Length: 307
Image (cartoon, rainbow, N blue to C red; front, side):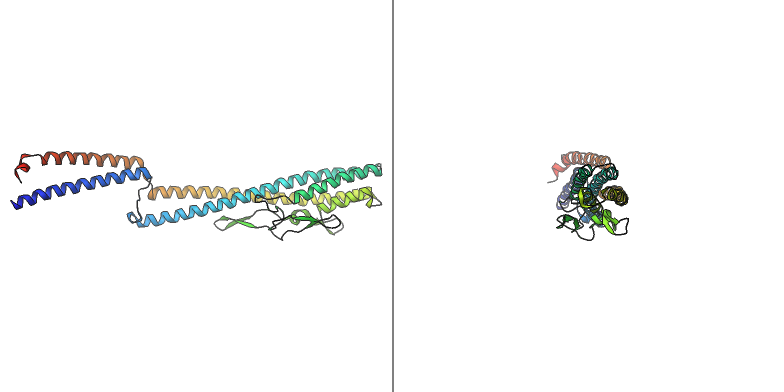
């Protein structure tokens, strides 16, 4: 009788263990469908888990690079907009200088033109002191304050740092987020001396308001410097446009790499819903059949007789 009892006990234990394994497997499939991941713990597949962690780190770093790219794009767009406004102001200054060079104008008319040039000078200074996306000097390099200040004579003087900061874009790539004022406002005048656009406009404004004995000649001379300054400004805008295009290229590459990482993550640890659902249904079918078979076998008269 002890042999029979042992066999009966073994039958129940084996059946219980088999059904428990089936229930565990079914729960695993349900968990995978719910979480979207087929790896519940690193021990399930250490190699895949290690690679998934590396991919996750790369994605976080990519997020930081994207933040830098967004800031650089915002600052460069602000710089481009400010430069466009400067160019418009300088074109108007050229028109006024051409008008003032006309010998038929009276001193009063030239003085009126000089006053408008004063307004253009003030506008240029304001644009040169534009702020970036963080509220710092857009054209002042690393300066938190203004890029330009006015000295005792009213001349605009650069007070920023020598260079603008570079922002990393990932994979060893970087971009300078703006330009310093002197990089696109300063140039050599027709006489070979160093000057900048704001100085040219201010000097002309003063000349037309009585500071020069030959205001018409001063206006004619200023035209060449205004053209050179506008060309220098246009070159600066080209540099800004090139940097914006570079950011777009790196953004496209970042998106492509992110998609590749997502695809690899899916291949390594993602759950194929269709396959997992089929496996779950198959497991549930086997479990139900096992439960039914166990119930029928356990209820046979032979088991009733085997105490």
